[in-house]
Length: 251
Image 1 (cartoon, rainbow, N blue to C red):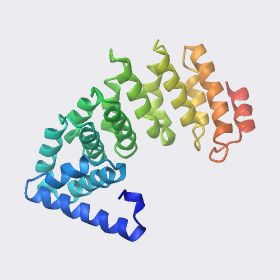
Image 2: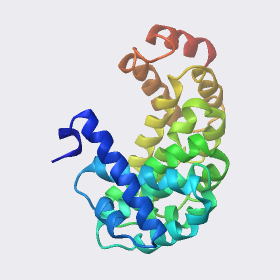
Image 3: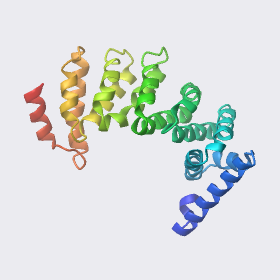
Image 4: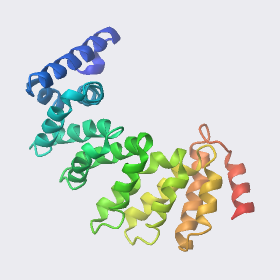
């Protein structure tokens, strides 16, 4: 039975059981239960497992070495669901101990399966929000990587931090303004739009774009920013009309 086929009480009981079994495995230096959860077909079972890893790692310093050994041993698993969950678990750890999982993130970036690479994007998003300094320093290393997919993943990954601290990510995004890959250009424009509609961000984004030299890309970004203020009008700080008025007066 799938996780959300259970009622609330049953789900809570299952979460407690998963947490207990994972802790038991780690204490015994085993991985029987963990591997079962990491490879489960149900996304929510895997999510419960990687969230448990993050909590246990933070609460039990004496178990951290065993946990990192497990994650590093399974990043090479033949099962992409296991590798994906390893990266998600590493992301939970990286929110407060980035150095411990940096190599796992680097390995995940180059994984052959898109679900693992997407887990890296998601992990960079949450790590850059909670532990920005080392995460953004890591991201910067790959902005000009020869693999276009790596560049795209990094661009997408730093989006979440930009929604609250645009001044920290805009200098990194600026380095991609002349990237010739259409998919990266599209992602860059998308990220700028996603940043700009958040509270206090439009002003910072427009001020930054005034200094970008690729005016063609800037025009695309401004069009996206205006459009986003309509698509997300229930969540935007400004109305579309207010955003257009601000841009016309300040760009």
